[in-house]
Amino acid sequence: MKERTLEDAKQTLIKLDKRTFDERVMRLKELGIMWLSAVERPSSQRMDDYTQEATKSFIEGCFRSCIFCCAAAVAQTFRHEIIFESKNPKEEFKRIERKTFGPIIDEAKKYERLRPFLEDAKWLNKLRNTIAAHPICFWPFPEDEMMENEIIVKGLKNIIAIADAEDREMIEQLFIIREDRSKVVLIDVLRDLNTPGASELLMWRLDNDILKPLALKAHQRMVKILEGLYPM
Image 1: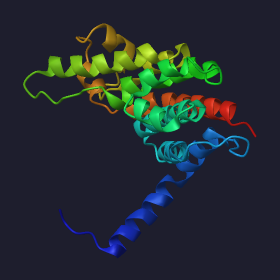
Image 2: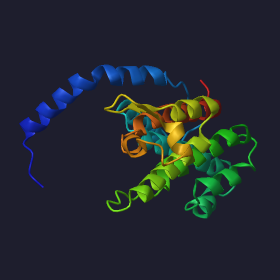
Image 3: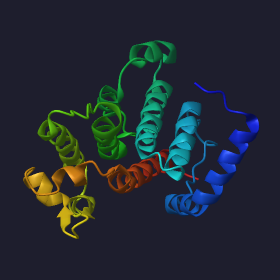
Image 4: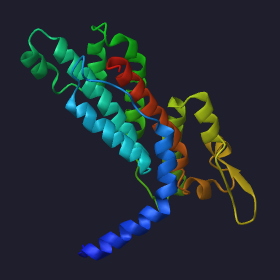
């Protein structure tokens, strides 16, 4: 790895800030402001860490990281609440310390305070697992273009399956214009990988167009849960 000078790093960030400032401002505006209070009831410090990282990730356009941090913030909050309600917090900490988000949601069913937020938590966990935590993708396969396309399409279909109707429609209608001016629409490629121009569309980076609205909804659900548990 080539060493970077301090001046080079400074100039690179200055140029990046100038070029992306307006985009980041608009993404920050989209998030709104989260209002919650830990005065009446203590909240988790780790929750605060993850909510800040979720916000920063969305602003910077790191949408998978945003989704992951939104789910982590809620998972940490549920753990905190379960331990806080326990008659023996030390033992409860040890019991649930290594439980993943899914089992923690099952634990949360026992607590009236957490029940109103179970469905949103389940959705966040499913989104996290589908997009940010568990998907495997291995390409290119230079000698097997069809297999390469099948892997990409499988990942896209998994994302579409969790999206709501509005986002599903948006994703399916993504398109590119080829050099010959013909239009290739994603829904046609999802239905038939032999669609002319399928490889051109699939190797075009669709991630930001697809993941941004899902990351925004993840952030909104996270805020809904946290504001509900710790209202001002």
